[in-house]
Amino acid sequence: MPLEPWQIAGAIIMIILVFIIAFYFEKKRPFEKEE
Amino acid sequence: MRSETAIKQPIMSPRQIAIAGIFGALAMIVTGMGLALPGYLPLVNFELQGTFITIATMAAGPIAGIIVSFLVSLVSAVGVISCPFYWPHIFVLAAFYPKIYEVKNVALRFVLFWVVSALALFIQYWGWWWLYAAVFKIMTVEAMFWYNMVGGPYIIYLLIWALIPSIVLVTTPNFVKPRWRMPGIIWLALISSIIAIILGLLWW
Image (tube, rainbow over all chains, first blue to last red):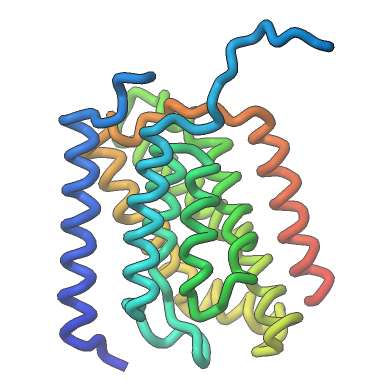
């Protein structure tokens, strides 16, 4: 069964989102003042 | 009356709770929308939660991984019963991950991460094979073993559980630095692995 276009688009968006979050935590270091 | 002399340490820091929440939400959205690779079993697709569970475990510890596994099991096609079957993978990864992170050579660290992910996935699989054989009665553990290990699904699941997390490990190492502590994680990993494998072998 081939993937539907919305699945491919959704997967790409999710991968981009994961890396945006990872880079945000890497550079801005949110929630780390208390530690 | 016993006086409290030790400073109370919270189980999770705000950062760890935030990471568990964010990746739990992403996993729920992806799985709840039905965003999965087709063709694993009848009515069961290759769901993608492994990516989110792995990243949460790396960055915020095994409790974060368990939170993500619970949240995603609420929307998974397999149902909430699937929640504990992720735990052997979470515990085995968490037992080795701080040691992997200490490896200075980036290439070696990358390879070791894949090796441990492959081992953790293989152990995790036994519990799932038991679930599909004993509870859902889709096929026997023996048939699941040969289908998964030789027929290709093991490779696909390994990519789901390790590909993006391993890229995250290389590109944003501070984000996934293991600042969490989990007492007795070696024992948790060992006991959960033994339970998963014995369940699978008993229903072979």
